[in-house]
Image (cartoon, rainbow, N blue to C red):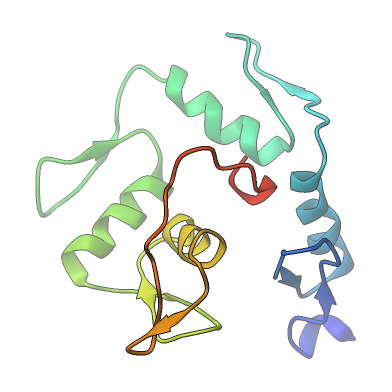
Length: 141
């Protein structure tokens, strides 16, 4: 089975480096490349492309931030945000650039690093002199 042999299912969209372990994973990923926003919030006008986006959005309607950092006053409505925040305290940088030696603590920062720079290497790192405004790449949508 391909699911046990690594990430064999690769996105064919231009500029996208996603690779999944299964066809189902790839199918879910492809939703980010299309404009259809079929998942609607019942409490506001938000529309998402995936069920996961809607579920993540719905946490903003929760009145209480129940996830608390044991190391500082930070609180969050989602365990995902607390986990990402806790990496600031531990120094854990699980995301690495496939093109240079850059490592970071969030997938969002890695995507910004990969898709926005001018792609020139400076001291082993991709030159990150870029502007973060007007992000039109669908991976940031």
